Length: 235
Image (cartoon, rainbow, N blue to C red; front, side, top):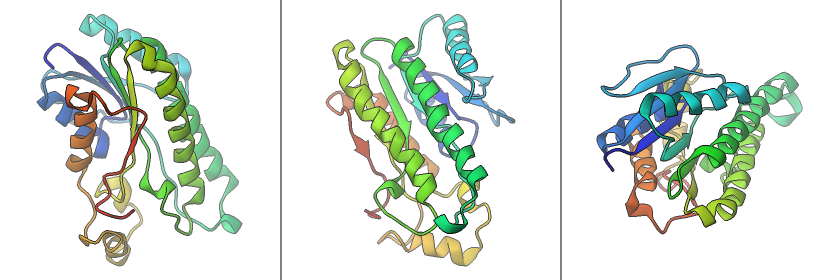
């Protein structure tokens, strides 16, 4: 895959950083975005600050990548997103729900819409969602709903971009051991998440990055319009 360019939105930590490393290891030139901290930038990669809620900033990121790397991205990964503390619907904060919608739906729309315009023909677009779309649990309905919306966008885009040879898929992990996952959880809560898998553990970011890298590669040439669920048997 030498000479191909991957652009990862939300690539400074956790799953996004694992995607950056996996794609770089597969020979991609990698660009990624961050909000506050670029994290550790791998050799040869380039980081761009971008607010995905602003379509102009998303478009400028694509333009900057084309200027800096000499071509439009071959692969776009829409990983940037947020979560908020879980709560039953009766107590869920309208402000928290609006934040989820603005980042996880509107922000994802901005990325995917620009990717549909700018990704190279015969490239790939990959969006990160969650297995919780299909594994209902108390307190996470609003978060899961925003990720379900992204899966709807992916399925439609797969039909729209097929004439250009662009593959569009989603990756829907189960619980993954990241700083975001552990925020606000005690050891008991982490154990409950681990018990959701018959392997009795949570996933590792590298395990998700490997799936994203596979979908970005020619090995996934016949995988299109799918939601891949690396979740250790959760569902």
